[in-house]
Length: 319
Image 1 (cartoon, helix red, strand yellow):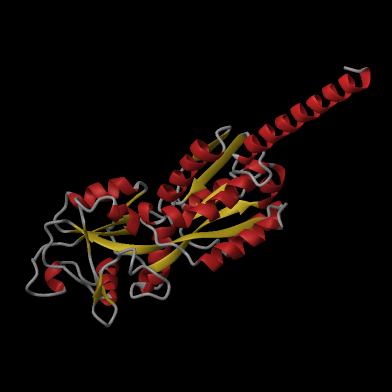
Image 2 (cartoon, one colour; image 1 turned 60 degrees about the horizontal axis):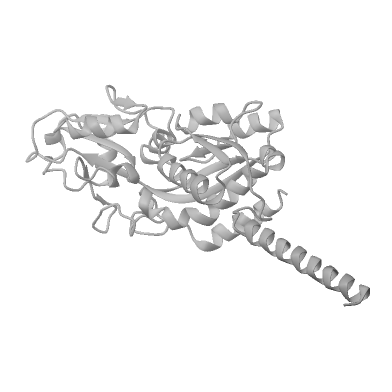
């Protein structure tokens, strides 16, 4: 074989080797969840709503297991308002989950600190009125009766219907750290003070236990905590004027039969952090792309696909 042929043979072989290596690298990068195929590392800190916690905890787990194993996500549940206090500080959390919209004073605090905040609507929740499983009398209520109970206008069950037990009504709910409390106070009670003596708790599992152990109990929280505890508590159907409607994944919708007790839930993104830490922006996109797929499993109804797409387009501008 001539010298020229030998040289050409080795040159072609070398180029084939390089092409194969490049192909392997591209295939490996394509398995990553980030836009450019990069394997990401770093931490993400999330706090806020106890209502949103099951959804965000599941998304975080799936992301760490299936998308970016080098990223560590910590999800806490101090409550919406308490979470905003941790979010709106220097070097605060990356996301704050919220079962209500950000307040004017919270937005003002963000502006004061130079924190750009992006609201991400992730799902729909149905406020659920719950009772003890042995309560076979309050099988449906009107919004006015719910108001009367939690304002203290009815103190005994028989005050609502004289055929019901002549027993004191025991009221329960989440405390002021939670957006659910604020939604109930502002929307359901129309900013009227809750009944004196109501038992307000920080932890939702504690609320489930208290209601499940008190035959005269009535409480309120997000649909997900009822869905995962149906063997322990009842959900009370609400008659909004056209017959009683039970909260369910089919009825919870902003334009559905349970609309009056339906609310959107959110996570709020620190845009400054998303610009500085690629894993934060990548996770924000992952949340929007996947929340609808698992919403029902964690007690939420999905949001319309066009809303998801609109929010994803807004995130593209962050880069």
